[in-house]
Image (cartoon, rainbow, N blue to C red; front, side, top):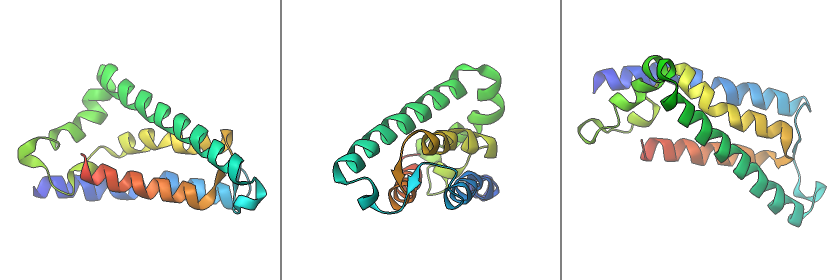
Length: 139
């Protein structure tokens, strides 16, 4: 359990890297993020949210799948996470106990989507928060 906590704590600063960079890009106007729903209207907000979710989930699925299918990536990056998701090793840290590059790769779809689809800033941050909670709960 102590090793699991150590691995998770080592990965957490790296896990925050991409959201930090993406927020910087948002604040500098480099993405399609907007701050007020009135900028696009409720119908467009809902449509953009649906498209954003499809792109992000599709991207995360394929990134995760490639981490399993490409043997060197699995061995050197993703296997670390699977050491800790067994029934006898589950803890609140299991969802974050992974190789730092694994976390960055699986967060890339969130950043890519910011350049493809207009998304409300708070919705983007909220979805990142929800995903973080789900990762901790369903490791």
